[in-house]
Each structure stands twice: as structure tokens, then as C-alpha cells.
Image 1 (cartoon, rainbow, N blue to C red):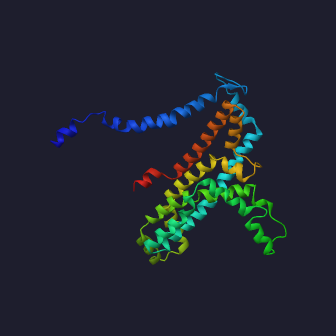
Image 2: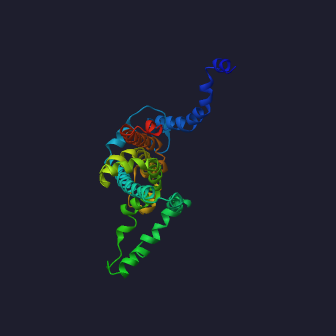
Image 3: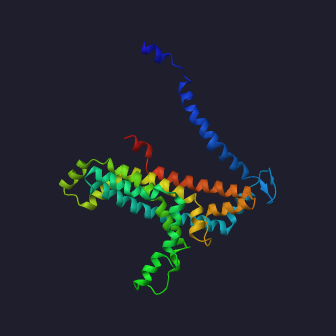
Length: 291
């Protein structure tokens, strides 16, 4: 009976099962992305948009020193934020997995890391302003302690404030996948390495880091895509003194230069895809997760 039912199943069944997700992805991602790509080849005078096929928008973006500097600054934000979140995320995960033996304490401390994320990103971002300002808590502490004589202007409305906020907002996106990968490491493997005379550094380099590469790769993808696609943090925490690619795109949209903004968006998507592809070439996430 079961053999008949399995043999008589329609060959269209797999396609029908995947159809709802495929239709949703095409409607929500494919069509908007195709529209942006199409619009990037049109012309605009700031008042009207003219259907045409021209590379002038891309030529203008790629030949503009300002735009190229914004791409480099955005990449700088992403690189520094990535390095800091990897260091913090790996350290916290290592402590929770290998130094906290009690499962209840592991869960409690992990939830403690997530408490700041129970509020919105905007509230957590704005909360740095009274802390880092010229008359903020940190500057007041430095002056009263005699460490500095005048408030430090670099703490707020600067690249430092932008990167610090990014680290604060996106560290959890690195902690979660790294912690998940480390938690799957068999403790007996660590004990066997110690019995064989391996040093803690050798265990970290030859066992823990290779077995955690899936979490590192996933965290890298999360952090890089979030930083590269943000403009609100740069706008608020830099006080308008700095900008990113997305900030420039918003300015173009505000001035009704939609084709130029679309060209910048397409180039940004290409850059992010290249970065994600580089990560996926280093770590085969699908095969790692299937184990």
C-alpha cells in the first residue's frame, strides 16, 4: 500500500511545496531588487525620471572621489566593528562554554548578555549621548579623577562614537553563533588533547578555533551586512560630521535623484555579496551545519 502511494506521487509535489516560499521571496526580494537595478540605468534631472539605458549613473558614482571615500569609510567601520565583535564574542563564548560548568549558570549568564537587547536599537544608541558627551558621566569621571583637565571631544559625535555604538548594537549577533558552535564541541576532545600534552594555546589554535569557524562565519556575515546597510547610527552618533554610503544614498533620494541612489545601492549590494562570498569560500557553512 505504501509502495503504491509513494510510486504514484506527483512529480510536481516538490515544486508545489516550495512554491509559497519562492513566490514570497520573488515578491518581497526579487521584484524590488530588479526594480532598483532597472532604475539605476535611467536618467534624472532632480525633477523627473526618464526611462533610458545609460551607464552615466555608475560612471558618476565610480568616478566621484567623495563616493569612493564613503565606500572606504563604510568598509573601515565594518572592519573595525567586525574585529571588536569577534574578540568580544569569542571571549564571552569561550568563558561561558569552557569555564562555566553549570548549565543553569550558562543559561543565566547568556541571558544576561541579551538583556540590553530587550530594548530598541534607538534607545540603546541614544543612551550613549549623555554618557559620552562633554558634560556626560564619563567625561565628568575623567575630570574628577584628574586623568584629564578638559572634556574629551573625541568621545561623542565622532568616528569613535559610531564604532562604539556599532559594537554595542551588534555584538550579540556574533556571540550567539559562536556560542552555538562552541557548545557542540565534545569536552572529551579537549581532555584528550590535554592528556596528550597539548598546551592551552595549542588546544585553542588547533581544536577550538577550527571547530568554531562556522559560528565565526555566520557572525561575520551578520555584523558586516548590518554595518554596511546602516545609516541611522552614523547620522546620529557622528552629529552629521561623518557619513556612509547609505547616508549618501538617502541624500540622493531626498533630492529626488533616484537613479543615482539606485546605482549606489546596486554597487553596495555587489560589495556586500563579494564579502559574503569570500566568507563562504573560506567556510562551507552548509556542510558544517549538516554535521
